[in-house]
Length: 194
Image 1: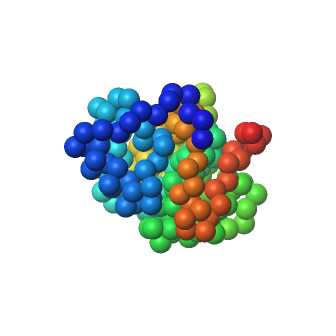
Image 2: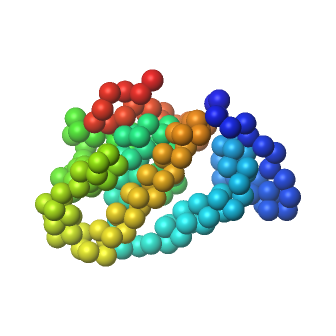
């Protein structure tokens, strides 16, 4: 990985805790952590919000995970695809579906609801936003308003993290390989990013 900002040394007591946690979770300390270490308050805020989203429980976990991967695929964030494949295995999600996210439009493994969620994730990610009243009405009817609000905010958070990673040159670090998954770096709905 060649990031656009040189990673810095992770230091201090908090740094030791973060490195220990990362090594336990991934088997090594991700290089991307050194990039974010340049601004520890931003890193803490992003990680803190990410941890809070994991406590939300009004929307199905697989729908949220697949939506995040759809954003990552659309934006071209190989780090997020890699990490989310790794997390899908840990959460017991359908790995066949996880592998198909980058080509969800042509894949036959997704239910009609999952397809609507993936389309909604891309519609929120494109510029200008392409969400329609019909999309929201259909998802609200199927999921309920509380779950839709949760899903929408997961997609918004995914846009924050994926776009930041791509801008900083943070790329896949092999998390998915540890669980036998090969992350897809192609973008769905648009030409493949090389």
